[in-house]
Length: 346
Image (tube, rainbow, N blue to C red; front, top):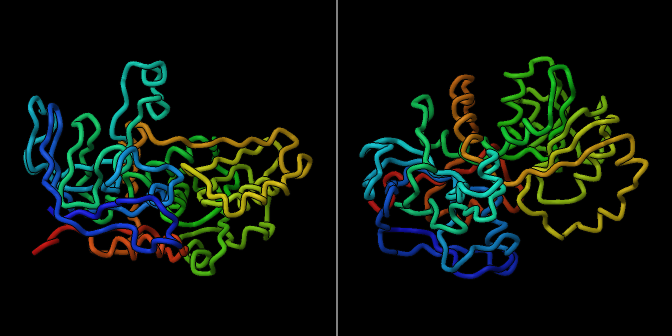
């Protein structure tokens, strides 16, 4: 089968084409696993974190990709949850132990043996992948393959982030960065909290215009003061500057949720500008998001189908994965980037 392989970890500035298109053996599903023929796979900033070494793969070479939609092509021994031909999704959470305190308390995203699709197990930048049946999801028929792919990470992690803000209807929400996850959060907020006003922050005019088109009340740069103070905020950027700026605009008792698996060090000096009185005093809070649990994915897919949420999608072929990643690095973003694999190799 065809797959895009990551063979070494290095900054994109040194290696602008980090993935190699290769022929590799088709995987075989193990006990209680399914073999999925991949139709589409979303491109996520976490792939940049893997490629550049902020959260490196547990082994090399590795096939990245953790927003996977496809159809069940084969069943491993004892796999009974799905039938051949069923359309399924595979997300970032590939495995959790099920036995630790975190798993037993419903926080499997914090499991010390958490394994990630595309980092610890081969992912969806390939024609086929295997996944444990307990970590695969039925995809609602309302979505196309391309629409469904970003829901599995950008959507699910956005859903978890929004829940962790504690947002209440009528409050003001800041979105720091406006990429794949933030644009889905905005769609959720407009449905679930119609009296809330959303303020979008981005360094690029295109992203700010996009936010306004989707219903943001205001859009500006990270250092611009919004028209009103923020009760809650979600940071989806790879940088520290937006975190410091966002804290400044929080109301007393406000909460900022950082939705990033890692932060880049390029602007870490921005933390030197953190001033206790301006940024943290009066019971302001910072909370991080770690991974997703299966419940996040399942609940969000149900909510997204009910609304329905339809992501804005930019489509690429499997062989164009390096181009999509470089554009993501350069913030050339409108919605979500998705690889289409249906028909690859024909």
